[in-house]
Length: 501
Image 1 (spheres, rainbow, N blue to C red):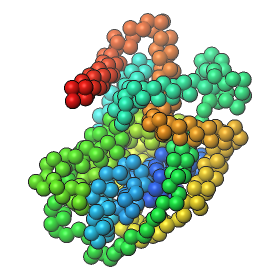
Image 2: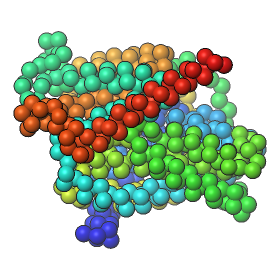
Image 3: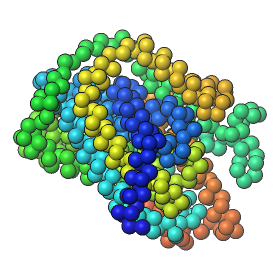
Image 4: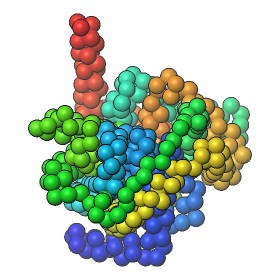
């Protein structure tokens, strides 16, 4: 089928009542989660994933995806009004969004954020439509060696391209691999790292790990800020006050285009993420500007570049996740795990084996972005009021639902203890500045890498050269080696410059 027929199939799935309801619930909850400071998309998806267990795989992934990019939309509200980013991806929004609010241009900042997010998301949807089919053509030559090499590349890229020290990233990937070994070996049936506990024979739940590392730990980190003084920012939400002027549109046109491209390119890279895309797009606009001194003082093009880039990257991350089975971020790793829970094997063959799911998801992106555009413009005042919920009421409710979600995932009381344990672990990791995202990616990709590694050796009768004699797997491993070499060289060069200084 050509692209037109595929999109007809996708919209026939996406406009069904169940998919429309799932998309609406997803984007609405996602926007609410994004507005709340300190929660974030990852904790929100981890918390709400049990709600999708009784849905069809298509409705489940549509709802979870709506939560994801909906939270990216909503995360900028607190950043603009209170200089308090709702998530890491909204940190760059504070640079110019909050000064605009202080100048009485909060309405324009919020409106530009919504419109820029819509433009960036639509750009990545078009990119996904165009590149999905060519990626499927490569699927015919993929076997276990190629999948193993791909997972290795994803693990290394996630650890070396993440923010902070690459050594810490690699260490967290190793911890994730160890956590992924807990449970029963698929091939031999031997219990590994269960310490005699029958509750651990099924392994560590991805939902429990994610809710602990990102949900409980965020609450513990923000607990000391519960009594932070917060003042409400009055916002003129009339249509005339919110719409940017012709000059502001002219200043932002180039930023919207460049931010869309930068976000899409970085979003495809495993481990990069929307936050890095926003920082890079903002830096590019500041360097290209004839008046760089305006940036940080209410430059609307800086706000437009950051918001377009992070939303473009957020939806471009679905390209490697759905087409190749490689998550582009920690949140994508969680969505990949959700597909596995629903019995869908992500990868190059997903378009052939589940075309209704794949193209239905793409069609739902168009519908979801339009819903967000309609929701966010008139409901700015409501989201502002949501920020006034006291922390001493908000956090106990979040903890209650986290424990409820941990138990309902497998009806295992031990999972409640595990989610608290991983929450304490995540809190300690934040204090030590250890990244949690590579750990989650290690848990998702580790068992997959082990499975294809052992299967490749079985098929090749123990010949390890099978990984380098195959052109695709050899090329992917070579790229992985280049990523490691480049990271090491950059680190050594930086240390030499610091020593010389």
